[in-house]
Amino acid sequence: MSELTNKTLLNEVIKDNLSLELSLYLTLLSLNNNHYNKKHEEEKLNIVEDFLRKVNNLKVKIQLKRKQSEIDKLIKDIINIYNNNNSLIIKYIPNTINIEETLNSMDPKSLTNIIDIGTKEKLTRTRNQDEYNNIRTKLINNNYTYTCNDLNITFINNNDTFNITWNEFYKVFEYLLDIDNYPQPFLTPKANRLHTIHIADIIKIIQDKDYNSIPDNIVISLILNNKLNIGDNIENIDTSSFKIENIKITDLYKEANNNTTIPHARWQKISITNTYLYQKLNTIISNGMYYYNEDRLILENIISNTSDFKVSININDMLIFLETNLKTNK
Image (cartoon, rainbow, N blue to C red; front, side, top):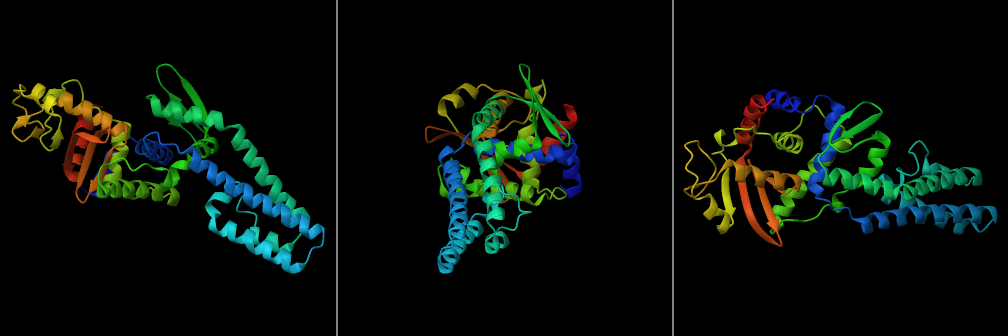
């Protein structure tokens, strides 16, 4: 499908760039599959604390008029920490402050400013950690819709409504922009590698804020994460483009009596009901258990290190399927 057609298709679900950015984050949340690595986050906090502690040590050495060689060595050490962890430290100390220039100035007042700003942000994040975890848990475990404007996001479901500022949202979900925070959920290295590549491509779009040209596979992921609604007459949908590659034998026996005349997904010669297919797809998508290999989308349900269902579809066929059903079920 053309880029223009894909943009039109995406606009059926996502109306503006703010909604698109939010949807990209929420797609990462499903691909992360509730894998918030607290230990990894604590390790990053330790880096920030080490940075601030050494800046404080530098200030003390300057005030005590220690040897210049000793001071120079510590400045070099601090700059190395900053350069190796730049994207992390600027979350605590704004990049409007030139760290290297401030360190080399050896001005105790300027160094105190760095320490105060970094410490205040660290304490705020630590104090809000339970609230952040609560927001993550809500969005992972419940089906929320959302609205957003330049300042706030409102999440809504049947039992709850809550607001969060964009600034808070970025802090709650900044871990999603770190590829090391994602599990390796599949049974083969190749599948895990392709899954990771897809995640990295979404992260890059968010970081670059490049919303004008979204690749086909990410268009599909965004739509799947927002809306997979194939209507009430589910068995009347042509799902023959889906190729079932693996299915539990017990489920296969249950499906063997499907005598529909509508082309459905098949395992070998056995036609599978759309009700069964749809339930499996919803579970797989909500758990982020899919990846793209060349021109195909592969979705796989894995339980206890065993694949109990696997299906694939050509990317272009999937776009056509989504376009048809989004128009039918507006």
